[in-house]
Image (cartoon, rainbow, N blue to C red; front, side, top):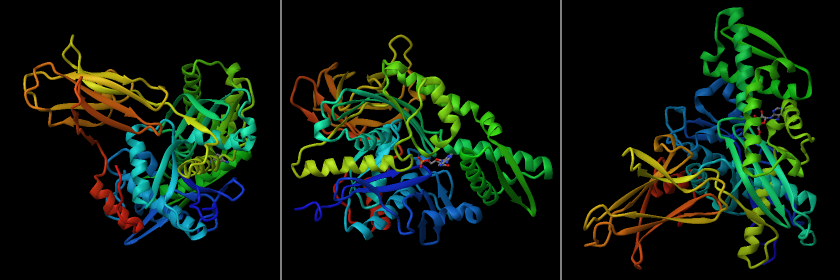
Amino acid sequence: MTDKQAAPAIGIDLGTTFSVLAYIDDTGHPISLANAEGERITPSAVLFDGDDVIVGKEALKAISTEAPRVAEGSKRDVGQRIYRKTLDGKQYPPEVIEAFILNKLRTDGVAQLGDFTKAVITVPAYFDEVRRKATQDAGYMAGLDVLDIINEPTAAAVAFGHLQGFLRPEEAARKTQRFLVYDLGGGTFDVTVMEVRGRAFITLATDGDVQLGGYEWDQRLVDLVAEQFIRQYSLDPREDPSAAGRLWRECEDAKRTLSARSKAAATCDFRGKSARVEISREQFEEGCRDLVDRTRFTTVQTLSAAGLEWGDLDRVLLVGGSTRMPMIHQMLKEVSGTTPDSSVAADEAVAHGAALRARLLLDRMNGRPSTFQIKNVNSHSLGVVGTDPQTGRPRTGVVIPRNTPLPVTAKRTFRTKKADQRSILVQVVEGESPTPDDCLQIGRCSVPNLPRHLPMGTPIDVLFDYKSDGRLGVHVSVADTDVQIEAAFTRENSLSKEHLDGWRSYISGAEPTEYR
Ligand code: AMP
């Protein structure tokens, strides 16, 4: 099969505010594909209008008039059972909303590139296991076959490597380079320290905040304008969802203007009253200082977790639309002593890196050699809930500490507490706290069918298999025997296969397939 006949290599950046689909063209370069509206960037907004579900620009516009029917920022709720708003009278899991977005990208892509199902999707490096699984589920419900889930900063670094020519075979012996990728998008912040050794992209440390992004900066402007409006009219426009939606769009626009100019204005209309509020860049920066400081703190900590100092880095790479704000450049310049590099397309680099990864995986499936390698770490410690022998209270036992290179397997041995015990329940959590309640509950691994007549204290091995994409597998065996036990790993807040298949056929019209 020639490349032209083969399925296209597709990478998708499923963003909080915008999403991008990219493919690899015949010359091996990543290209962002325009959607049906002719735009390369699709707003991650979904309008629920009776039986019609509209994704993208039209849905984003509808925030000004029909806010209660529009879902935006669903990525921030991924991992929760239900999206924060009831939409047109219905509740949706956040990954279902994401599936509608992916389905639009897929159908617009198929119309131009021909049929495909295989794609690589990106997630913030700091996404936990539950959010990664939910993203993979969103892909499944959108009729996709998700080849891999890769981290956004890694994808951006791969895109950068492609631009710089690192991926060419003759570049394999190039000296090791170290990057810090600072990725501030619409809804999430990630910082990742990477090493590029030959053509291997190795993550050394990663950290971030899944509730910190351009939204927070927008919100500061919204509050500033709303406070001015209240002073003038004793009315709060934020009380009404559509007025709040209009104000948010005005402020997001003003924020972009403030990246280029020293002043911007936002207009607020509510209950027949109107106010035009001018904001200076200085005022905006003052109002957002704590947000910038939060990212500075995490950046410095991550560099130190990687065991490096600023002088060890070859560059600080900027990714994500929010890095266009001058306050971010200034802070990074101050703290690193170098000028950050914004040579990759802030909005498109992630999708490009994902498409390059898809090309590599498809080539590998066809027996062709790999052009580059990705080595990832886990962004959160993985643990099991045990009992503190001293206090008798529940306690997290770390099985795989954070920033461990992936893939990794780790074994934990549990002992039966009585003779002929028939079942064991292992609670799996992610997080850094010794108190399980402060960690994220990933799920429960129940071993219901232990062989009969095991004596008290029989060791049972539970094997945690953390894959390169940050997804987890759990296997159980009776220690020192060849008895393998089918462990049922029940996830918290995850849709059942039956629900996934139902949504898959509703959203994308695709048949169910094998899916774990
Ligand atoms: P991303 O998820 O990387 O596409 O980033 C989207 C975020 O970048 C949104 O919060 C946008 O408001 C923000 N953004 C895009 N362009 C600019 C700009 N010129 N100045 C400030 N923020 C921007």
